[in-house]
Length: 421
Image 1 (cartoon, rainbow, N blue to C red):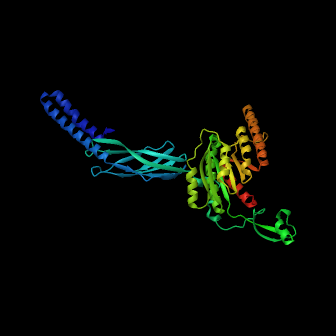
Image 2: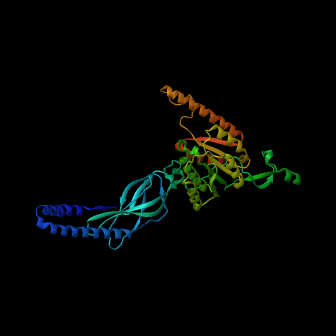
Image 3: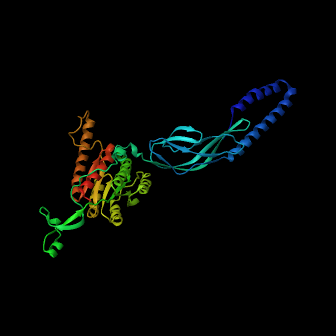
């Protein structure tokens, strides 16, 4: 787009307008005015042509991909190469709708992304003035810039203890229960239970022999995240993504292996349990762009995949929503195949209205009473579902929205302490 600059407007006002006025009042000056206007038109055309040629030689690029964090200020920087005929130019970016432009200084743009995911910036705009200052032109340049917006873990309350430098010293943690693997055998001692007696060695030696179990130090932990339509309720998926990554940090600090599985009506991403900084980055890359889809989850296919790909006994956190009775029934029926080998935990974001009828403040209107009744019925259904899942070896818990990560990590540490895995 070519636009006149202020200098051209002044030239028209101070030169062209008086010349046309003179030509209208003095017929002898018409030829002079025509020559003047032709010369001015040629000069303006030449100035505009040179500006267009210069802008076509401008090259705009950027380092890609760029990593930013949701709701945190970040910088997008462009590299602009100008030809010798162009002294300076202004740049702008065609930012995605979820990006807020905070400040722009030359080729550096301070932005604040309001949603996580992967975004592409395809266009940049270059604006420059002509050599003689008569024109200003705006050109569009193609650009390949991929921006990855990750969740900001530092804003979650659970991150304060995980990332605190004051918590890095070794601490003694009392373990409850016993491990599952036999470390050695010893002579029977008073107080040993019958399930600790190794009957084959007892028969061979003719004296009672007990098994000594060892504490498992390295275990497999998996976060199974539901990315179906259920993720739209209570911003569940946003909280599950943050909680999964913080669970990965907690597992790394406990020397455990962390794995990740995302699913909708089919399995989307699977990262086998491992540890290390590079593995955390792989997990973050696999989940940061996950968005709720419009399909319902297929638990039968999910559990079939888990049985096929996760052979070693592991702690599985299913981060989903079982408020739908039909989906809850499907989950209960198909989860039996997994609970025989793994420790299964189900976590759901609690709705503020799902609570016992006579709890909280008194209702203020008839609509509040109806909402309380609906919330109580839903709460009763979830309690019944929790009891039915407990019978097949699945533990279910409703997570408070603002404390979802902290409560999830608390469950992991409880299982770790009680050696349930």
